[in-house]
Amino acid sequence: MRSLGNRTVLYQQNVAASLGLYNNDFLSIDILREKGPITAGELSKLTGLTTGSVTALIDRLEKNGYVRRQNDPNDRRKVIIVPLYENKDDVINTYQPLHTAMVKLAASYTDEELALISQFLGQASAVLEEQIDQLGSTARGKSSS
Amino acid sequence: MRSLGNRTVLYQQNVAASLGLYNNDFLSIDILREKGPITAGELSKLTGLTTGSVTALIDRLEKNGYVRRQNDPNDRRKVIIVPLYENKDDVINTYQPLHTAMVKLAASYTDEELALISQFLGQASAVLEEQIDQLGSTARGKSSS
Image (cartoon, rainbow over all chains, first blue to last red; front, side, top):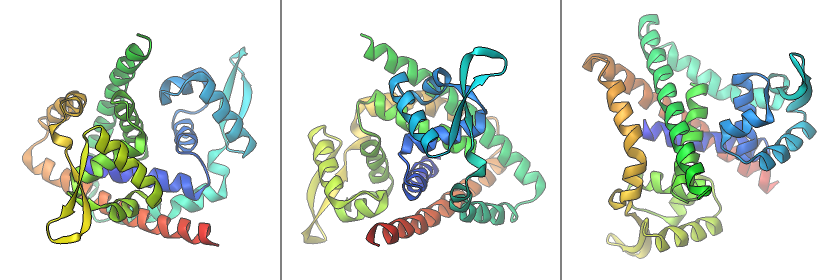
């Protein structure tokens, strides 16, 4: 798991670099793609970045066409960040070789095996989310003291 | 996989922050733990950081007791970076809750299932390493042009 973790971090850094993006900018794009439109405050909480950093980050991403700010249709007082991620050809092209390699890897397993692996990955992801929450609250505790 | 990937990146960032380390410093510690003692040049290649950045990074880590520079016993002309990682109580303590949660998750699977999952994780890790190599050579191609 830790070996895969390091590779994942390095891979994300390399993808970000090849797209000319800061690591946290790229990570935020990926989080938005997963979560759908959220507010700047929610993005700040999810990334652990300060609201000031997130504002600058959204400015950069909006300028480069990765996201768009718009009024929340459910609450006009709120501004949400909408990902424009999947439309960007350079993002799709950058991920394409990984996608192809992963599809090939998955093809060497049966449907039953893939269901088991997928279940494990989902659970591991949930464990990590919980751990991030706990680390985040510890760090916030430290910085406010 | 992508959801787990984002969680992994965020988790590593949070661990680094809670230890008061830069992300790349923490990542380098983890790579050294995995690979064992390597030269600064090898670490530079693995992380994709410039040799100048790696030198400054090793200075910081040595100062904080995470690594030690020493002459390679097999080749006295070479200096290798030796991880002192596992001795650091604050690192162990920071990882402990994740370790406990992952052991608990693993206990809900049979040995046979865990062997399959472990095989998949190893293969996914190898796929990522290959992709990082390819992205790295693309990025180097770009920056030298």
